[in-house]
Image (cartoon, rainbow, N blue to C red):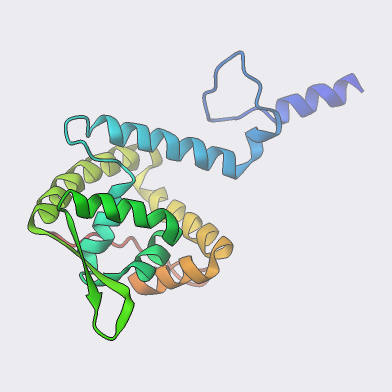
Length: 194
């Protein structure tokens, strides 16, 4: 029995993730969701640290980038592309509009839908944020390894598509992600905004 308990404790230790020495994480060591959340938290912290003087929330970056890539996108389409609930997206858009970075215009014939666009100030801000994000991406490529990046992105897309099929699947089709068991993963490079 003691041998079984010892073997279980060794199996549940993370093999490549440093943790505080005095904290046991037990079954969390083998849970993908736990490690995804930790990685996201670390990435958000590093991204925010680099934006100290810009007074910009890191969560706004994807919203601005998606609007920049899709001028005139509706809030519903943006919500699907970012896999974010519309009720969570509305306060972000309110703030981006208040700061003068995004405009919302009613769509003719549909009083409930708005067309979203970046303002000139929003485009300049997105250019700065994109430079920062690309620097962070280069750092991630060094950590992950260029040869493994496409596989990691493909796995993350597979998770999103499986768990949010109507949202992530539509987003994958919209941007042309080639990620399936039969397809070769492709990295979609951002368009140059300059």
